[in-house]
Image (cartoon, rainbow, N blue to C red; front, side, top):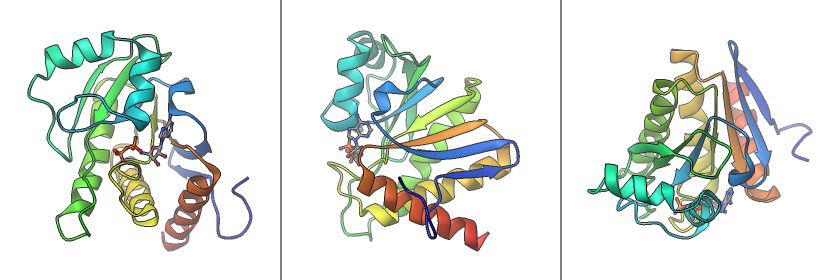
Length: 189
Ligand code: ADP
């Protein structure tokens, strides 16, 4: 469990809740699941592979039909969710880590913001995010967690929606890092 001093797994912004859990994003019962997509929207490993495997071919068919040019890094697009229990998959494209001087922080924040905007625009009550860019794209975990959480908290303060944002971290170590960063942000606010 990520608990004890220095770690936090739940945070409230007005009536909205931000929560951190360990798990598989494709198991989440939420209105929208966020995919860690690539800019060609071509499918891949990690979260993307899991979503297309569990969701079935309709997600890729819709993606190719609606977004044949892909999606720029730092942005996101939305499709249905096929066989997943969610209503939507939001395909967000985080940056590939290149050392930190290629605008990665702003691009990562922008991918989260755009995904949250799409969720709100489609009246989603709940949205589940993976830790964008921290797998194949190699973004350092603490920095990525801080950006993910800070951007989400700022968005919730401004928009008071969606009511639930859940970060689904694949393993305990990743959950611990997110829980430490959330505690830091809570102390600072
Ligand atoms: P990116 O290419 O944006 O780095 P990845 O899918 O490679 O995306 O990894 C993003 C994060 O998601 C990593 O921390 C990885 O461990 C985690 N991850 C991989 N599969 C799943 C899954 N099924 N559910 C939740 N998180 C996952």
